[in-house]
Amino acid sequence: MHTYTMQTTEGQTLSYTDHKRWWWLLSLVNPLIPLFGVAGHLLTGNELWLLVPLILMFGLGPFFDWLFGEDENNPPEALVPQLEEDAYYRTLTYLTVPLHFLTFFGVAIWVGSQPLTWWGFLALTTATGFADGFAINTGHELGHKRTKLETWLAKIVLAVPGYGHFWIEHNRGHHRDVATPEDPASARMGESIYKFARREIPGAFQRAWMIEHERLCRKGVPVWSLQNEVLQSYLITAIMQVGLIAAFGWIMLPFLLIHNFLSWWVLTSANYIEHYGLLRATQPDGKYERCQPHHSWNANHKYSNLLLFHLQRHSDHHANPTRRYQSLRHFPDLPSLPIGYYGMYLIAYLPGLWFKVMDKRLLALPHVDGDLSRLNIDPDARAAIYARYRQTP
Amino acid sequence: MSKYRCPGCGYTYDEETGDDHEGYPPGFLFADLPEDFVCPACAVRYKEDFIKEAD
Image 1 (cartoon, each protein chain N blue to C red):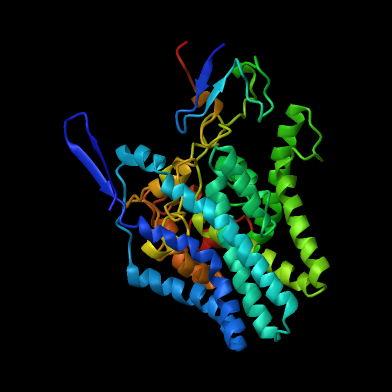
Image 2: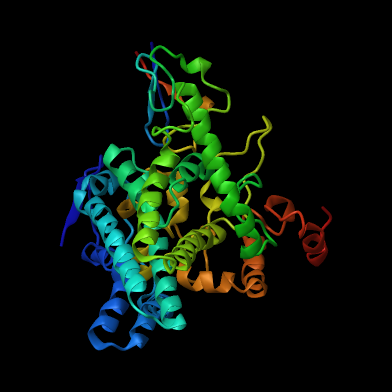
């Protein structure tokens, strides 16, 4: 087992062992889950196998979070630099990229060439859409890094679900505007995930385009050029997806539309739960305070941490956006979700239940202390929320 | 020509080289960056947070 050690200035030895080190290899299994269904169908001829990927993802996810519980692996801050240097971890993210392509094309070929029932088609397409939501998650990890290799891998993997603008709008837009009403990727109190999605999906694309437009104007380069980092990824998407339509015909249209949209929906789900209702205070100079640890919701379950590259350690990610996933740290006294992301997504899909679970958590946060003026509230829900909690706007 | 470092992530703006990716040519002064400039690497820190490095 690999242990990182150092001597502190006081002469003590600090050490850390990542007990999840080899478990991170699960991230190479994840992108391939839809192919298990295809393989089962291919080998047995029984189309019920196409339901297996969905069961693995959404049935087992919350169950494994409950079973394996909290993740006690938490590196000391002083040892983070050593963890960052360990190339094993970043290699895993590189390797997921071709795996996402393998799954995408494997499933597309199966859908395009086999006579499937409507439910077999839907189950397989849905599972692949969710699996390529993981592609957006990997694109998130890669896209935050400063090496040319990793930013290119981000653009390439984001091409699979057709979400090439994401890393730009996320790094330069969401991280700048997080937990403010101006951020389409931060959910407001009283806003259901469905309402949020109608704001987030177009708003994020527009923000990416605007950011990239400004950058290219400064460089004196036309927006419609191959230097446009949004268009680079979308060009790869166009080649792949139009190519599939040309090869397999009209059946690819519903496959691609459902697949792409569900991948985006996975990202929408993550965005929705990560900052729901939280608000950065406005400074006297009119700018928002810098993002603080209490501006993110966190979870620390071992299983979902493994599948999401520690995305759930969200406060540390916003404090240190360029920090590699293996080094992200958990802090106990921060806004916490009651269960891991997979379970929270299911709750979010039932808005009545979501508001019941989360609104009281929002109000109970120490920095909020019951004061609605400290929260990011949906204007359409404002009056009702203030009335419910008997406060005056 | 000076260097200015983001205290959060370590991104450094070097006035001598500028930042080609961002569209700031060599010699572009830090002071002339837009007032709403945020760190291009982490987007957490504002322009006023950057620390001028000793020459």
